[in-house]
Amino acid sequence: MSNDKNVKPADQAEEQEYSLNDDRRVKVLSPGALIAKRFFRNRLAVVGLVILVAMFLFSFVGGVISPYGQDETFSTMTELNTQYAGITETTSLRYTAAPDAEFGALVQSKANSAINAGETSFERDGVVYTIDQPTPDLYTFSQGGQVVAYASSNVVSVPAGATAPSFEFQVAAITAITAADEAEEPAADAPEVTEDGTVVVESDEGDAADAAAEAEAAGNTFEVDGATYSFDEAGNVMDGSGTVVAMVSPFVMSASDGNTVIPDDLRQALLTAIEADASEVVYTDANGAEHTYTISYDAYSKVYNVTETTENLVYDRYASPSLEHWLGTDGNGMDMLTRLMYGGRVSLIIGFIVVFIAAGLGVIMGGISGYFGGWVDNLIMRIVDVFYCLPSMPIIIILGSAMDAMRLDPWIRMIYLMLILGFLSWPGIARLVRGQILSLREQEFMLATEATGISVPHRIIRHLIPNVMPQLIVSCTMSLGSTIITEATLSFLGLGVKFPFASWGNIISDVNNAFVMTNYWFIWIPAGICLLLAVLGFNFVGDGLRDAFDPKMNR
Image (cartoon, rainbow, N blue to C red; front, side):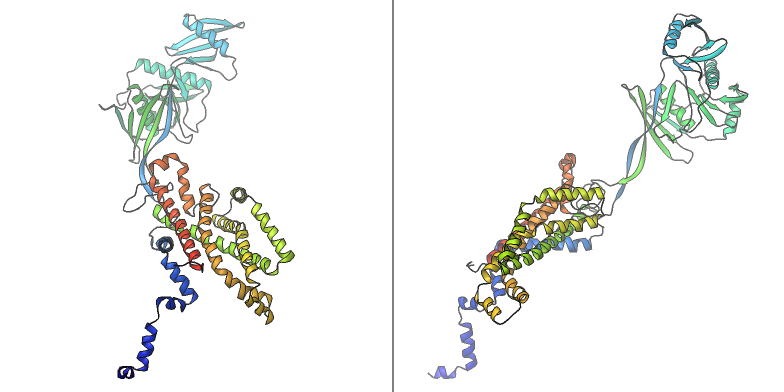
């Protein structure tokens, strides 16, 4: 007894406090604390929460600390082979008639027969044509002492943008040049071919007038219509100022770009390479820049294709993971890791806003329907039935195609996408809220609110909706995952988020290209993993909340 008297009242109270068993401890917890305790006892729910926290940190914090922007592009220097010119060799006689002469295919056939037979004239349709051969490679056809056509394996071509030469000019140029080629040896300063089959030439752009004077001094001239023209060994015909007005050669050379003028020395080097069966020409222009040209022969079209190899600054597309870009770059030369961060931000924001829109509409419509009942309930539920009958995916696809046709701004398009998805998603939440309110409105606390004269909006907002919130939170959490999947599907189909904005869906859309899918795993696998983890995390958390809010759960 003496020991009992020595115990102080405070110690007795403390001893009574700590003598409570675990069951009584749980009973004194607040409803929120009790739900939290049940939630954190669920291991899968905790795993899902950790996943979601990691996804939010990755998307929202990672995008801030990333040194790159979501639409920042990166470039690299690379060698590109572009088509520069095409060269065709004339291996048979080519006929050219005067503008006002009638020298068609039948006459040309008769002329061929006469040439092969060694005749000096032939007759066709009562017209007699005289055949002359000024040079071994030129035949002229005269009628009444007037040259009306010629045949030669040499072709007169003009530089880009130059005026086509007259018929008389063509005859005189081919006559003079073929006669000079027959009398003289090839030029000593022609480009030389190295042992490895490469023609090396440097541009020598001297005074054009001096070049014309040298050609004239060498006797390489001819006169047409009172004007004197000179020509060099490569077949370039120049006027008095030294400007090249035509080229005479059995090779027809045309630039792939109509605005490109092929320099004379480069033209001679390419022809030298073809004659020497060389496959490469290294050319240094007047500015000191070195160009490499590769010559390949297409046996089917019988054309020598000339491609130019140049150093170009291009987008660093599909670069492999490196220290600079941990997940490489995409097809636009953008950092994939940064695009994943910003893509997660867009996907999560769209998911939450769509669910908020659907929840807002669903709570309003479901609350009104469940509380008032009668014809109001019947009307709203029929509207819900109509929305359930709507084919949501075809509607979204049609609207997405319409927005494509209108070429909406990507930001405006994303806002419309969220509104459309939210507007089509509210019926399920409305039915959930209606069912809960139908069971709650007949309980005693609601009769008490009615007896005390509380207004109808106050009863719904302050007393009914808070009692529906647990089920609403669970439903919204479970809907987040499906909303993100829907957005990803639309973006994958090209109907969702548009460039330059990134989302996990439009990042994965690169798998439409089988080559990218099989060779560049870092383009689509990380986005797929992020999408999987986010949806899985929302499902785990939704399951955990459902179990925690269920009063029958014993965890």
